[in-house]
Image 1 (cartoon, rainbow, N blue to C red):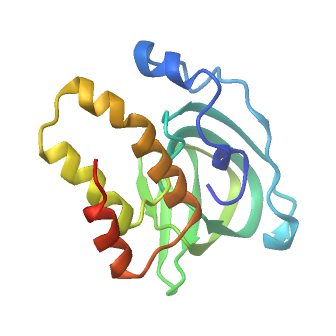
Image 2 (cartoon, rainbow, N blue to C red):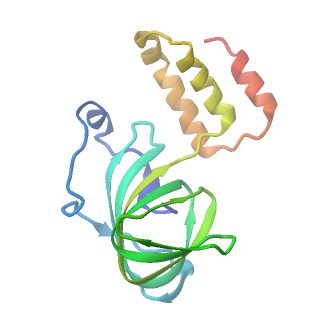
Length: 188
């Protein structure tokens, strides 16, 4: 979700969460103040609160609860985000001008690196499934390893390297196809 608390990555207990799972009621998660960037606000004084339910161990995905009061604002998505509206409603306008009204029970998808206009008339509460994009040049080697059906032990041994590639993917945008060639020729 934009540039806020959710971009911090996996919570401290992510390793235990991966083994045990994380379970909570969306109604009882402890929400924290999560203000909207002031320059994004167009009208009103929207107040937002959020809580992270869970985060992927590699820091590239998270599930969050978010709520907002009346106001109109632009929201920049640094991550791709799928939302499920729990309560209230919101009118969202795409960068191309398409308008959608999302009500309780509706699902919406917001691509990374886009800015959408949000118009909240009253209140909206959502679950947000956020995912950081991994550039194809870094994703391909990871998929190749998975398709090779490597043993669990070998995959476990590659976990550090894969996590390092994912970390790098979150911070670097590689557009040069020669980088893909280099990655595919590196010895394992």
